[in-house]
Image (cartoon, rainbow, N blue to C red):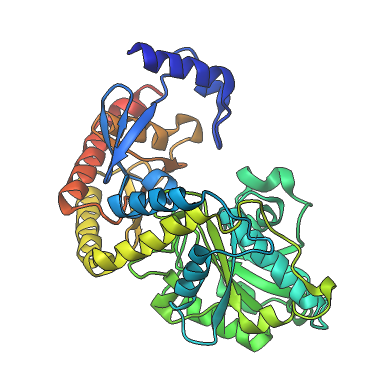
Length: 436
């Protein structure tokens, strides 16, 4: 190990606290964390000079590859003008142009307003606060509940966390935040008593596919059915496209697959191409109008770095790259290539129980060949991901589901490398489980 690697690891283990991480394991004497020093395209390098394909897009954020020259140039150019401008009582060209371009993805007079924040959780938080305040200011204050789907994930701030349906993440915060009714399907939603629906301000969903729920797609047509139910019941529809937005599903936004326009659209992660923190909550002119008039009707919520110019510059550049590189047009062939490779992987490995794919998003669920789940204490998914590192692939599992979500810029050859690394790691699985 290089001296600088050792120094960084020792300082990290002494001072840093990592998200979603068992810190006792992380700080164990025999644990050697990877220290990532730089990236280029779909690849990352660690401090020891080893190269890895970024198989989960640095937690689902990277779109066009690391260090993309167009985005990097836009950030440098903006930095020479101003690094930050307050959006409280001021504006700047980058935010104006970005808001205009985001609204232009949708039909006129639908999603017309953009509220900027910092990350996916705060994008959802904004939508919830707006939805609740809209009801208060529109003569329907009794509609203060929210409907969310079982096993959903919408972020970790208190309001967003109250929607969460994954017990290991949210059980400690139960009883706080918003009152939430959870359903598992459209049938359960339709079966809700009328008095429950009449108390509900909005329903929140991850469209097409749930992420943290081990990458589980919704049935085709479900989103359109949900839009129709919301229209029939006067319930607002909040779409959490933090993961699915910006091409992940094969279209710019997942809702476009079923021609659905929500009342609130929450965006983050890929908004800046995976370069800087920035989020956006889009909503309708009708909802916006309810906040006009008396001062007390204003939306008193925001962050110091709302609409940060550097983030806006990166986001505008990312949208430009979509056009320049025909990202969406070229993506379908990659989606098909990935689908064929995953099918071959499943056929070759009996422990691949299921492959779930939605566009350029995939979950590979591992079980015993007879269908039994591996004991959670074995951490089989983690073991396979660690094995894949030795073959030049970085990704993370959700329990025993391996997540594969590379940058959209990943080439066919790089997809082949990714699949070969998984194949090699899965070939080693008998050695992994034989120790138990």
